Image (cartoon, rainbow, N blue to C red):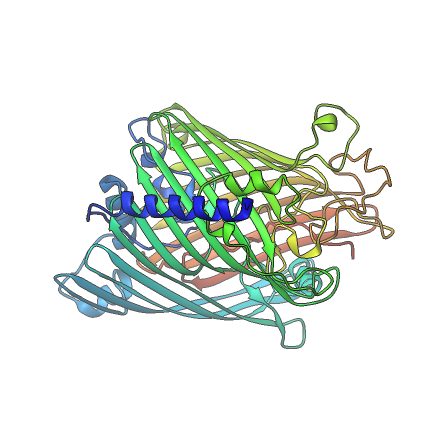
Length: 544
């Protein structure tokens, strides 16, 4: 009776949302995958005290005219030599483009190549990516884009170790061993998007979503491989709401039972822009499965269709087997261009131990606080971010192997998993067609050792903690490991439409504990193209 009631309630709310948001045909949309490097260029608008729009849910659906024009200016660049078509295709345009009064189409080949020298590991690294993208619009309501990459790479030693342990090239896909520590992968993303009104966007495809105002997200990040999804995003006044249903992979490589399975996720996020300075957000996720750890299939629960936030989590309190993650986001603009922000993620709560100091493994949570700003030292386009992330042991893990908070053997939140502390700073500067970036990242985490689960590996069951009582668990417990990571890049943007650029990069990384020390000094030079966010600042998955 309870399930039937909730099904009817969810269906009722869904009909209300669709009918309410689908009444006015108006809106603008520009498909653009999220990457921190590209989006930070919008800081002067996004974090201005005159802008009251929503900033935490990415990629953006651009209802705001000013923000839409800023996106376009970054993508179009300076339209020079407009009478020379060959020049514009290389430096300002798409390889193929066609438009009429109510429709447009574009297509590009995306070269992404570099070569490097891992000085410490005494090896030559290389990246040989070839991509293809195409997209377009039909009127102001329907848009689409698809991109596909074939990737062949030889990585520095620390990334090679990670790929061998996890079986995934970070943020991209399943690694196929080509011999001599050379790995290949294929990555496909695409979105079909329909905006029937300025109040509603309906989209489906295979991509990623990022929630938060920082560099990292403790709720939902863009670190894992793309996943299949269906998403409703509604806006009404100062409220923005997302309901998303996903289909994800749980590969055998990181499964505690060594089997390949599929799982699904339901994500709800409500963002409230209280005023032009303050915003608050409320997050909910449920991870469910089709086949349990014993191989028993279960029927689909239609309550998951419910688009209303927190309704299913309340039901979960009544012995529902699926795993819930709740979260809060916030930001406050201290001044024009300077913003303080934060997140809190709650994976499990046990009231009797939450405010004690007994280190119960049933209290699993993480928190983030950060400061970001633009035009540092009154230098135009010099943006900065300073952020700390802290996650307790066993957060994002579950009692069932398939219900951990992951997709395709990668965390859905922070790349480091759990049981860590991190301090990260980023500086970005743009001068004409030159982009400069610098990252400094310092972390401490506890790896597993001697067969004991200390809580960093989210793929292990957390009902087998380091102590039988489940008490005495503290952040960075286990094999204490320190990480120092520095990365700098200098790029000259050739074509802003595809982010085609010549890029010189360098990485200095030291990861150290009592069992191993990894040193990396890497220099790379290449011709890059794409807006993808590729993370090099990852921690070791296991000891080695």
